[in-house]
Image 1: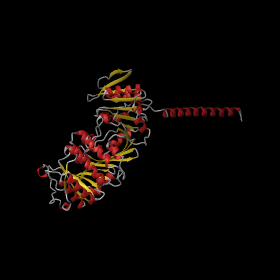
Image 2: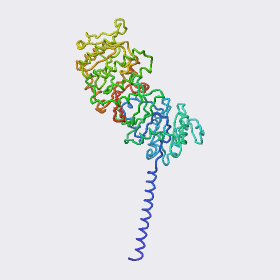
Image 3: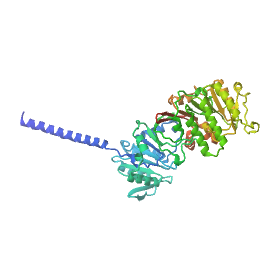
Length: 544
């Protein structure tokens, strides 16, 4: 080969190698930037957080929420003022960058703190290369007509306060790695303390253990601090000294007509809670639609293979709330003995509207407990009433009649007037014990109700085949749940809204605080208990 051709070929090779080297270096540099260890936002979250929402697809999450039929109908869940602002300005922020939000900025956390209100939260966001400048430009663009930011120093960290158009002050702390904002300055200061002292949520063993077993990706994940559940009061809270501090993880998914939350909570303890009582039970293998009137707007169904922990939980809740004489506590103990001997493996409680409902009348309420041997259980109940007579029934206010004229198909089933007991009222969750209750045996189960009309209406409805099984809302709800469970509850929130206050105790207070939104949904809640793990499922079906 001629020298001139050789040099030309060598020059081409050198140029190609240099270009390839630059390309490889650029590729490896970009890969290094992409693979750079992401900042862990959980190292900023204070340990006293009561809930955390996490997503690494914030833009997609907002779009999913906006595409819900309830959102299109202008029904929104305003549990976070920060999220409202984020939804309002997110697309403007995305429009300020040619390639959308960075991977880091799509990763966001929202922590909730006590006292629980829409402003008592902190929004955390990771920042990638160039995001700091993007945020500053965005803030200047949308805050330029407001007062200059108030800048303060807290333990060497700069905190800025921006006055937003509605007059609130939005406090922000951001570095090259993260952004934290809140309407509460004290929460931003608490974030600074958490980072300096390394006392974050991730340093809490119960949370770290659960987070380490994270199951996968979803539109969003919600972590909730589990507290003692009081069925009698319908709350998710208990006095501070009784809180158990375990956590539950929920993965959220959406379609146009429903919101799905499937969860898991690891570990059990000896605290007297309803969930721990459920861990002692053999699971149920059927849904109760055939045993519920078609007009049912609330029911719960739970396993009762071991009555002792459930009774212990129920009666202790009653005795904690008020002073009850020894005679009433003795009656509770007698009821427990009766149920231990005769009760089957589950308990069903329902609220439903009777036919020809009259204005001012309360809905019907019935609790049904299958009996191992119906005939033997009825004979023993008669003996029970001989030992514990009601007494003075003719003078008791609120005495009820079976109303066989309206419900003739209930005529052949004997109804018994029962003495008062806290156990029965606590199992139904309907508050203080009544002066008396009513009972009868039907289709192998003991039925208990606060009035005779409820028993008659219940039997008449089932005898006529007017049952919940097969109805569209019921089938859609149970179709999203596991067929094997320890507890399930269904609530038509619109119907529950119009019930007396003591009925509202059956539903966690959170849903009533946000009733403007939840009244448009049917709520299904399920707990599955296996080994020491609880799997809660929540389904919200939009009524439209």
